Each structure stands twice: as structure tokens, then as C-alpha cells.
Length: 500
Image 1 (tube, rainbow, N blue to C red):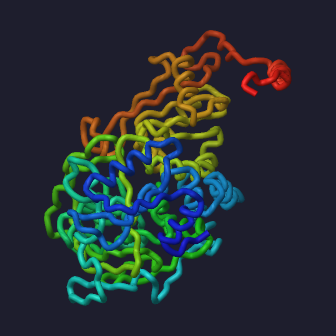
Image 2 (cartoon, rainbow, N blue to C red; image 1 turned 60 degrees about the horizontal axis):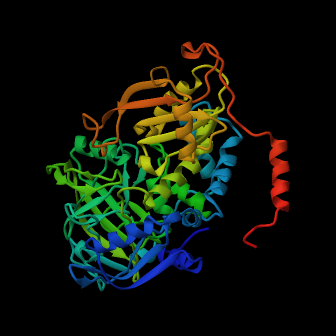
Image 3 (cartoon, rainbow, N blue to C red; image 1 turned 30 degrees about the horizontal axis):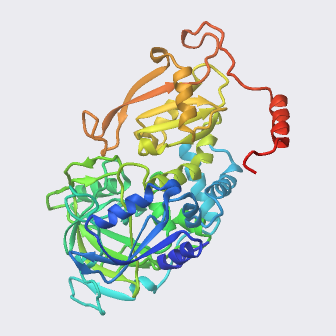
């Protein structure tokens, strides 16, 4: 199901009881964060919030701010246009199941081909709602221009020690200067002034690779950023797709309608014509990098200042009645937990094609994505748990996983208590631990060196005879006889409830 605007999506959320309007004035400086954080901490993620009168430095902004719109299982399913995320994963599985791939790269290549065949390829259009209001900075053209600079947008200062205001749900469009391949990523943007931000594309991200080529060539890099539109766009921008697979192709398939693309006013990039707000600009490779941060990050700690490129704004275009989408990150659980979980569920069938023993995988909220990964496998031979550890560390953004705990297929990896029970009961620390080194998330403040870290794998599966020097009988786990359980169900069902 396609959503033709972010406002339409919010209306659907409201009709489903998933959105609450806050009509009184609330400051974008910290106050919205505090309200949203309390909502996100509620069981199940609370409701989406629409702040109808956000203020910037005490002045009412001209557009509303929406937050926590992805922060529940139900809202994520609505984002994907399905009854559940599992339904979307099952459909995706059918697309690539006809021809089993031999490796993960081939699986994603096959996925791209399958999506293209399903008529999900973006289509070019000449006009769209995102051009209803146009403001070009270089030519000073302005059609009504309700908010001619970034300072007029309701951009939040999220946490007390943040270096300033940050755009937190930007869909950043870049092109490879050599191949022309498009990438859609999500990289936070610290606002420096009305026409300049930082672009926090991390070392291993595709946009950073594009940027390095422009720096090597000494050419100005075109960059465009869009906000809002169909909510599936932001999901796809945050999804861990491999380099070369167009995120807007996935978006078209999910929304069951091709993404309409329109050329920007001041560069040659294309953006969704149904987006709410477009920020056009460039990165200049001849100017020095600038300090970005601190920023209260999804790790639950502040990311300290690092050097990143500056984004220079050349135009803002937008709908006449746009909505500014935002999010916050911090100590879990937060809204981003539901985005990350949906990505895992959606692409798990593809991982299973390459790792047939894989049963399920979970990224618990406490692990803030990469820090902690629970994996269940159908174990059939010795050292299989270690094989899956190595395989996952070599699979895209799973390279950032700090801890991988592997359990047997009878364990629910979404139940942290079950996993920790098996970890305590089924491991010998020296025998079952695997240390290795590799790339680390640049946001991980605990690593000795930036972007380089240690990984630990723990084999909490049952041990086979002779495995890793194990020479004892493995005991069965305690379970009640099924016939007895059924009999007791019948007994208890016939006993009157004392409260009735």
C-alpha cells in the first residue's frame, strides 16, 4: 500500500488509534525529547506523537513535527503496507526462493532482479507535491517561502549536551561518480547555520565511499536530502542493504507502486516527488572537514566530536502543508529498535538461504543493534556454531556485531531470559568462546581504536561427542510429558475459578 504523503500516513495512524496529537506549544529544545522518550519507553512503544505547535527558540514553527511514527510493531507493519512484518518477509522470500543463491552477494543480486521484474523500478515524473513551494538560495527565487532557511524548521536539540540541532530522519541521496549508481542512506545532520549542516556518513557507509571518490577527483559532490513522503522511504534508507541494491527499488516493491522521482532544482539528483521537504546542496572537497557532535546517540551515550564534511544548502522545496518527521535515539528501548527489528525480520529469509541451519535471529533492545546478536540454529555437526559466527561477521553490517550468542533451535531468541539461561547452563567459558577482531561501529566509544574492535562469539548449543574436547554425555533438558500436560489442562479447565 502506497502512502501519498506523510500526512496521509499520520491520518491512517490516527484512525487506527496509533497517534496522539499534542496541541499546546512545546519547545524543540529538549522538551519534545522528554515527552517522546517517555512515550517510547511504554510497553509496546506507546503512540506516535504529532506536535502541532513546536517552537524554535520560543517562536512557533510553521509546520508540525511528528515523532515515534515507527515505534511499534503495528506501526511498522502499517509502514510496510502489510498486516505484519512477517507477511512482508514471507512475500520477499517467495521472490528469491525460485533460484537458491550460492552466496549472500548473489542472494541480494537476485533480490534486485526479482524486485525489478515486479515493476518496482522508480519512474521519472515532471511535477510533484514536493515542488509546490520553491526557494533557491543562489538565485534568491522564492515562491511564498514560509521557511526559507533551516533555522525555520522545527529541528530538535535532542539532549542537553548535544552540539546543537540535528536532523534525525534525513533520507540522503548520493550518486557514485563513476557508475552513476544511486544510494539512499540515513545520516544525521547537525545544523551549523541556516544554510549549512554536517553530514555524518560513517566510514563504512556507501555515501562515504561516494564522497571519497569526489574528494579524489576534486569535484563538488551533489547531495540531496528529503524528509517525509511515504514512510517506507525512511525505512528503506535505514535498512542494511548491500552496496549496489537501490533502496528505492525495495521501496517500490513494498508500497506496491513505483516511486515517482523528480529532478532537483539545483543539482542533477532525483528525489521522490511525493516527499514533504527537499534540501538540495553539495559537499565541497576543497574545504576542510568540520567538527560534528557531541550527539546523544543510539548507544545510550554521547558520540564525541569527530571530523565530517559540511553540506551546503542551495535550495529548499516543499509541500504547501508539509510535516517534519523526526526521531530521537538514546538508552533503549527507543523508536529505532522497531525499525531495526523490522529490517532483521524482512531479510532473515535471505540469510537463511545462505545459512540453511539458521532458524532465527534477534537483536535485543539492550544491545542497541550491533552490540548483541542472538542466533538459533539446527545443529547437525561439530563446530557448527562457530561456522555461523564467522558467516554472520562476514555478512554486510553484521560485521559490526560485538557479541554473538548461538543457541539451539528450541530456544526463542526473542526471549532474552531463555537465551541467558542457555548461556549459563550450556557453556564452558574457555572452550565455547571465540575472540576475533574486525571492523567496529564508529559510534562504539568502548573500542581502543576508532572503527576497529574485538568480537566475542559464544557457543551455547548442546555439545556433540568429541566436539572441542567434550567427552561426556550431554543431559536432556527437563520437560514435562505432553500427555500429562494435556491431562492437566483438562483438569484445570474443569476446576471453577475462585474469582468467578
